[in-house]
Length: 125
Image 1 (spheres, one colour):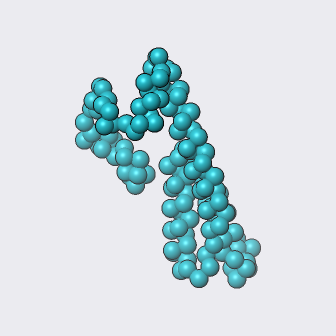
Image 2 (tube, rainbow, N blue to C red):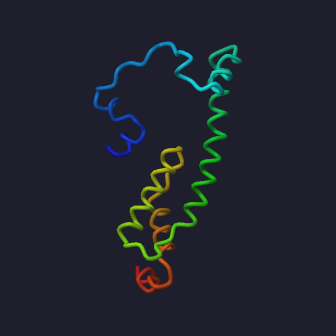
């Protein structure tokens, strides 16, 4: 759990080492695109809704890209430990965008990425 919390930048919060954030934001804290979104909002609810929509579009694009990479994961000539590590890293990327893979999906990706040489072992499971 610690690596996942560290990936999300939450470990300091869990360990009680995080300092409270500023109650206001400055121009340096946001990109121009986000700043325009915030300035156009009349209420905080409008700001949050607009931000959620903006990030949802980015997340959908990331998910499409991850889906393509997920389908292309193959062991090929890599050592087994490297291949499994790559699958786990890719699964972590899904978790980072709020779309975690289940253990069954991860196992299925490993089995299906092994190739025909490993078929007798996979079928014996």
